[in-house]
Length: 186
Length: 206
Image (cartoon, rainbow over all chains, first blue to last red; front, side, top):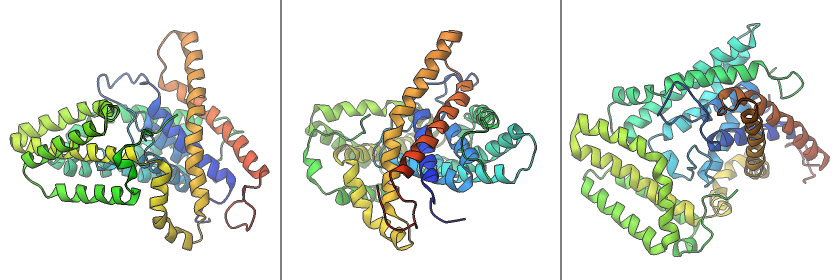
């Protein structure tokens, strides 16, 4: 496998996935029934899907590209935030975790050989999209917010139900993609 | 679709982008070692004063901090409960200060300037054989694609409302994703047709 986006198709799908994540942050709140009152971003759903649809390497590249565009000042994070400040803020660790999360989701989806694509996608998204991302987000939240690790974990745990729901949505979208579009993982 | 960049020129616009970015990084490191919340508060006052001096249109940007308020409230409450007022004021103050300073840079530096300032960081990538113009192209493609994807989401959303009368739900992600991926085929074909070369295949750019 080459180390760079090798074809125009790769480049386009990576850019599309990055734009997809941006759009999920810009649309007015989608109904997420469980997490009433808690600000929930659909963007992690985009991160999971980037991994599922594009695979580990291109999925992670798409998230990196998205974060770069945010860093240079486009207001593509949920709530219209952007610029280099978002990485210094309390949720900066989660953003870094997205890159690894997309990679792990894509990698797991490629090694789970189940017949049922829904359950394979669900397992990959739950693992890649929740513990992996939190493993980066919580320590940074604890450092930037100057709170103990367990308190940071407690604060972040509020988002887990919403994240599980998003993993279901990602797996559902992935499993029911029409066969003729998108690039399949090998 | 406009970025967070403010095109109305201010004094800050004249400073080189590299200087502003390095100063921001330096401030981030420096204020991590400040442990008195009063110093941080004073710095925040100065930052807000800077916004004010730059003009009212800059001051208005501060409403963009609103989405962060719930998070600040939770962090502040946790801190207040477990470590007292000083720690809470220091933490929240530090975060607020960094966000204010970073936004000064964002506001006064166009994306092109930031890309140019970061160019030296790309040169090791170039030596590895990566073609950085493909990366730059991807960045502009993303910025170009977002409004059109947003439009395609709006169409899906409207149709959903018309059919069900309810707010859009996560179920809509599935057809939206299919729309997005269908776009990809066409764009890739258009690039191929215009001779935008995949990396490693020699000459010929679009």
